[in-house]
Amino acid sequence: MITLLDYGAGNVRSVINAIESLGETVKIVAKGEDILAAEKLVFPGVGAFGNMMHILRDKNYVEPLRAYLRSNRPFLGICLGLQALFECSEEAPDVSGLGLISGKIKRFVVDLSVPHIGWNGLNFKQASRIFSGLNGDEKFYFVHSYHVVADDASTILTTTDYGCEFVSSIQKGNIIATQFHPEKSGRAGLILLQNFLGATAEPIRPIRSTATTTLAKRIITCLDVRSNDQGDLVVTKGDRYDVREDGDVRNLGKPVELAQRYYTEGADEITFLNITGFRDFPLEDMPMLEVLRQTSKNVFVPLTIGGGIRDYTDKDGHSYDALEVAAEYFRSGADKISIGSDAVMIAEAYLQTGRQTGRSAIEAISRVYGNQAVVVSIDPRRIYVTAAETVNHAVIETDIPGPGGERYCWYQCTIKGGREGRDLDAITLARVCEKLGAGEILLNCIDRDGTNLGFDLELINAVAGAVSIPVIASSGAGKVEHFHEVFTATEAESALAAGIFHRREIPVAEVKKYLEGKVEVRR
Ligand code: 1PR
Image (cartoon, rainbow, N blue to C red; front, side):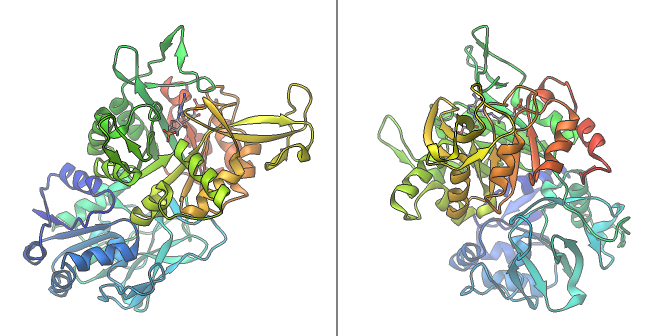
C-alpha cells in the first residue's frame, strides 16, 4: 500500500495511475495521521511553491510530514515534492519550506526558454536503487521554472544541464526526490517508480554516453476532437480548419485508442483539443473528461487538453469560472490546459485598460497550478499588406508574397476555431499572455493547417523571438524534413502534427529516426 499526499493542486491522477499500473494500491492522505501511519509516502507536487506550503499548513500536514521524513521511512517527492524539502524558494520568498535539507530553490537565470519543459537526461552522481535497470541515456520529463541549489553535495543524486547544471534529484537515507516526473516519463519513468515501490532493486550508478545532458526537441501528436453528426466523439482533422468533407465531419478514429497508439509509437506529448469547446461547455461535455480519465490510465507522457476553458453561465444560471473547468481537467488526468479563444478576449481587455485584473483565466490558473500548466493556443491567419505602416500591428516582411505580390503581412488572431478574426496580432497576443502568466505557446497556423506544406517558419520565428516561454510549432507538417527544418530554422522547442500521424503517412518513430544525429530527440 502506497500513501499519496494530494494537497489538491495539479495532476495526481497520473501518479496514481502509474503506481496502480505497477500493481500497487494507493491510499490518499485525508488527515495528518495518515501521513504518520504511512509505510511508503509519495508526494507529487505541482503548481506554485507558496500555494503548496500554505495548503500544507492549512491542512496541518507540515508537522506530520516532518515527523515522517525524520523517521527515515521510504519517501518519494516529485517536482514541488522535491522543492518542499528545502528551506525556501525565490518563488515565494516569505514562505518557508520543510527545511529537511539545507539549500534553496532558485529561478532559472539562463539564456534559454523558461520554464524548462521537456525531456532531458541525468548525470548520475551516486548509486541508487531507483536506477536499477537504467542504461544511463534515458530521458525524463521536466516542467519547472525553479530549481534546487543544495548546500550539501552528499545529498545530490543527479544533476541535469539546462544553461547551467542543476540538481535534478536527491537522496538522503530513504528519502528520494526528483525534479522530473517519473509518472510522465514513459517506460524509463515506470522503471524508476517500480524500483522505488519494490524493495529488492540493487543500487547502481549508470554511466551516460555523453558528458552533459541535452533537452530533447519534442514531437507532439494532436487530436482534434468533436462529436460527429451521429453524436459519436471522434478525432477529426481540418483542412485549413474545415473539418467537413462531402458534408460530413472527417472521422479519423477514436480519441482514447489513437492516444494509446501514439504513446506506444513514441510521442513525447499528446494534446487533445475539443474544437467545438466554444459552443459546448466542457463541464457538461463529460465524454471529453472521460477521454482524459481513460487515456491517463495507460499513457505515461504529458497530456494537454484545450477547448472551452473560460468563465461560463449555463442555461440554469449556474456560473462556473475557468479555474473550475481547469481543475476538473487536471483531476481527470491533464497535465496542462490550453486556452484559445478566451486568451484573445483576455489580451484585448488587457490592452484596452493596461491593467492586470488577476482574475483572468490565464492569471487564475497559473497562480494555482503554475505557469507551466497554462498553454495558450493561437489560431492565426496571414493578412497581407502593401507596407508595414498601413496597419497598427506587428508586421513582418515575408519571403512568400501575397496574391497581389504584397511583401508584408501580419498574423491575425482568430477565435471560435478560426470563424472570427479579431483586431489583434499573434505576436502581441503571445507577449501579453506571457506577461499574464502563460507558460507555453501552441502556435497553430490556419493557412498551413492540413496542407502538408511545412510549418510557417516566418510566423514561428516572429513569435518565438517575441517571448521567452517555449513555443510549440504547429500546422503543416507533411514530411520528416519539415521537422528538421522547423528545429533548425526556428527556436521552436517542439513540433506538433496531426494529419500525417492520423492517416499513418509517417509514424512518430520515423520522424525521430530521421532527426536522430541531427537534433536531440528522445529515443
Ligand atoms: O477556443 O479555447 O475553445 O479552444 C479550441 C481549440 O480548438 C483551439 O486550441 C483551436 O486551435 C482548436 N480548434 C478549433 N477549431 C479547430 C478546427 O480545426 N476547426 N483545431 C481547431 C485546431 C489545429 C491544430 C492541428 C494542427 C496540425 N487544430 O491543433 O492539429 O494544425 O495539423 P496538421 O499537422 O494536420 O497540419 P477554445
